[in-house]
Length: 467
Image (tube, rainbow, N blue to C red; front, side, top):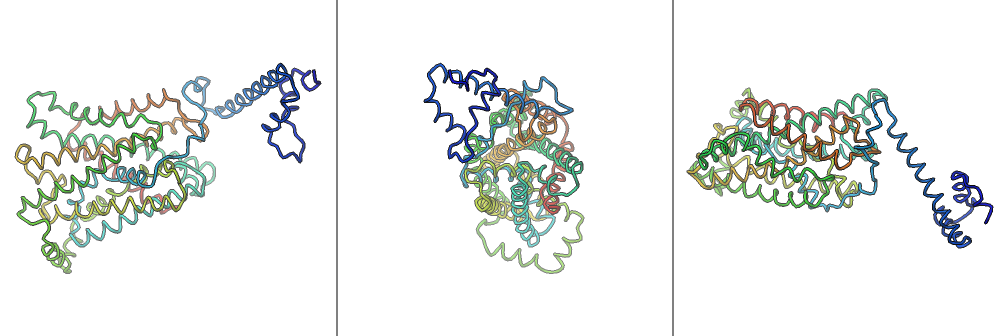
């Protein structure tokens, strides 16, 4: 046998086999294939066994180095695994990614836009919706492009990397932003489930006699069961998420048509009377009306409501990784397309009910519409609105799960949770969210919404200003 194979030391054999002349045009793998013809079958088997043994040793060393930290324990290997970088490439087109961004953005804030216009007035409200839409799209682009420049994948890493606070300051910033993302995700999930319960409870009382079917637990459990299957996927680029986005996106034009038609019917106005809109706009453009709205105590609440309606950057930030061609130009086009559609839907949804009900437009628009069983169109609008809100919940669960696993150091740039850990984390989020959404009154819902509003505005508008 050749002397190169007489040495049974794996390191020596690997070194001898992997060595090649400095000017060689072959890679190490090609060199192995080139020289395998010099050996008989038994020698080839020995060569392969030595090479596999050496690769296993190197993998063990890399794994041990990665897991070596003050908070790591030996049993962590059972719920973590090496991240497969080949799975990072997305599969979605511009259209699907735009729909994902749309479903991540439209939600409770979208349904409260008419109430915001009752506090700001029609002219100022339209201007604010247009400006904040541009700011939301611009801040999203700034966050993602900053992440590309820094070479990071998470929104908390963008804040930690862009702010020059040193190594310790960077770690503190990541922890703070990660905690804010987790708090925002949880408050959004609970508030959305509570709002769906508010929408469906009058229908349940009108349609069912059973106390259980009218209970808060049942009205929270049903939408949770519908949305839960979409949250157990590992990546947002999964085709089930894309199909869900297409279906949910179609509900908003239907909801807009139902709300606009029923609002104008009960206000005894014609929805397509353009002269009416022009007249109202001219009336509100005088200095006295503008000053009146500016002096109202609720004007800042209206501004924050509009800002909250488009502040979903922590939910939409991961979508650039789901695209098949995730170049800077392609993603910018995707964001602008998504927010253009959002603006087209948001403007009439805010203006038409405000024109119908004026300054008496309630925060919950359905309070101004007939009660259940009196108008089938209003009943259908309640169901469609609840179904549309389900489209945002999976993105909030996905973001919350990532933030929690990163806070626990289970998910890192080099490692990711295995399937079992992912299922346990997602299931725990759902159990806690269902419990919290099932208890408490309307005041509890307002607390969750106001908390989510504050954190969403901080992540969506204040963080990009610091970059």
